[in-house]
Amino acid sequence: MKVLLVNVTGKTGSTGKIVTDIRDSLLKEGHEAIIAYGHADKVTAPGYYKISKRIEGAISLRLSKLGRCSLKGNTLAFYRLKEIIKAENPDIVHLHCINCHCINVYDTLKYLASRRIKTVITHHAEFFYTGSCPYSYSCSLYSTSECKGCETPQYATGNLFFPNPHKNWKRMFEAVNAFSPDELIFTSVSPWVHERALKSPIVNRYKDVVVLNGLNTEIFKYQQGNRVVNRKFLEIKDYVLHVTPFFDPLDKNDIKGGYFVAELAKRLPQVPFVVISSVSQNCETLPQNVLLWGRTENQQELSQIYSGAQLTLLTSKRETFSMVTAESLCCGTPVIGFKAGGPESIAISKYSDFVDYGDVEILKNVLINNFNKVFDNKKISREASLIYSREKMTGDYITVYNCLLNNIVL
Image (tube, helix red, strand yellow):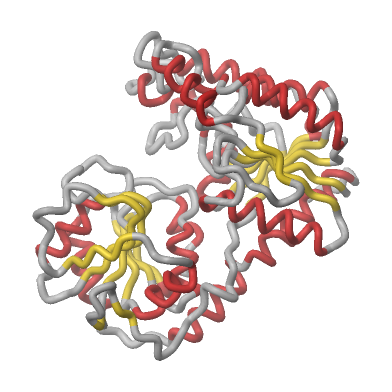
């Protein structure tokens, strides 16, 4: 079996790691696997094909602001992908995140359907079944009215001028439904995404199965006795951890919810908060009990920080999965936070507690109630590793591939 995996990033980011793990597992089992990726840093390892350049993605972004459909993306990348498919002749093409102006999504789907190539599409975000929105939040217009009457058309489409979510919905419906039902399977990264997808007329005639994201449980595991020390060599203990790619404590509307971390810290000055973030801004007036760690040096360091925390705090408005939840539980640390869709549907319920989004006072009480509890961290880690390991994820995907190739009903 030969599988072509397509994603925006090469090896970086959460989906980049996921795609790389799938490829490595396929190779170990004697299959062939190659990766086509978009405008990320060039990967020199064999089996990686770069199909999009940053400048091309930037041009597509600017054109979409003026009214061009954002999912038409980079047409040059589509032609490059076609050449790879012709040269490699894969048995299966597995599409992951191919938005973000990476490629012309519609042309890609229609081409795969016309060639009758067995295809797997993973819902890491929601745009395949909403037609536009990567996150549709509480909106259900994609399932009831083909996105007619959208109240946030500019957000949905990324177009500053002439936004038309309904037109995008129709485009996606036409592209997806070019496939026959026995040549396309969707996978959802959480039960919450699965339920949302089943409501969409764009995709609901096709099989959709849940395959949870996986991670390296040899790294993300409970590490007893490790001291957690910041870069000023001050030992930290009994802290609440918040992990995010972007942290802004002043922006109430930021999807990752940094504002709520600061609010909790103000109301609980006796509790230390540690924030891991790649990018931070507007942090000049942070409460003194919030330590900005910055970016971790590697995953091993991140695992140690998870293991040393009393709780991990998730304040996102929307997540389709939540790698933070999976990583924290694999490191033996319980999770609390707001209901964001994916997290509460994939978390181990006895080691997590989620409240309605934005209810800081209730979340504060949950934090207080859980902060001094004694948990069996090793047990949490063992249970989580069985659910979120990359071995389980890749095994589930290989099952999907085999069923699709052999017309076996999942």
